[in-house]
Amino acid sequence: MAGEIENALYSVATPIGNLGDITFRALEVLKSVDVIACEDTRVTSRLCEKYEIKTRLVSYHKFSENKRVTLFLDYLKQKKSIALVSDAGTPLVSDPGEILVKSVIEAGFKVIPVCGASAVVTLLQSVPRADESFKFIGFLPRVKGQIEEIFLKNKKENLVFYESPNRIEETIKILTNVRPLALLSCGRELTKKFEEIKTAPAADFLGNLTQKGEFVCMVHCEINDDIEAQIIEKASTLKSLRLCDKDIINVLCAFFDFPKNRVKEILYKL
Image (cartoon, rainbow, N blue to C red; front, side, top):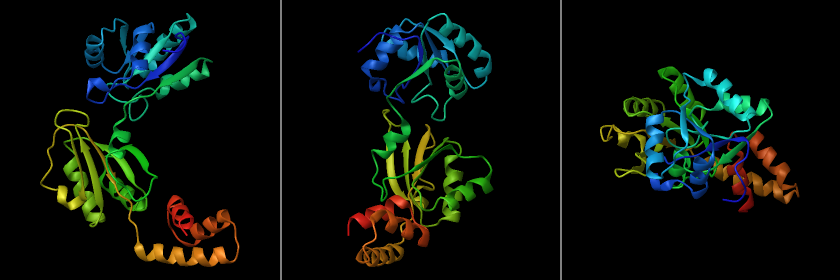
């Protein structure tokens, strides 16, 4: 690893399932810092045992965030280094850490990211999508009306979210009720032995789900071919008037309720 460990907070991504997905840099950091702040010491200890990491573990979860911040700031003031990890994946992505990171920055110390596994990126690299853009919203709310509103308001986004196994069936029922033709991608047990990744109409999942393991899902954006045809026609007309691409994109986005990135793709193909 290039450079010595700094007097800083390292935000370290850990495997989401397969322990072999840890990076060399993450291992070096975890072995070299003075303390590891982790959601559950029992979970992180399994990773530490596999890679012979002897660093002291201190629990840091959503119920202890406020209490632990002072402790970790004292460590930094003593010129020590800290690694922040979650049970799986990347800290602060639907995991604890926001309060600690904010406090560390406000106290004048560095926060150094050590990138690695993420369930969101793992799903996205496994499924095709019409638009490169996506919107990640973490875990869905528990109220049915709020879920319906999210699905309806984000028809033109690739909407990515986490869901628990005991709620996934009901969530897909809500989706199919408000968007009967929705296309859905679901990843379950990602990077583990019984990994499943499937893309199909949302209705096809009902009655065919293995309700075990956390899910990461993407509701595909709705693409209206008629609107695309109109955009192509209008874009051609505007180009003939010698408008610049930026102005054409702004005009089309104002006229059509359509994702800006998709409008750009259409324009650049003309």
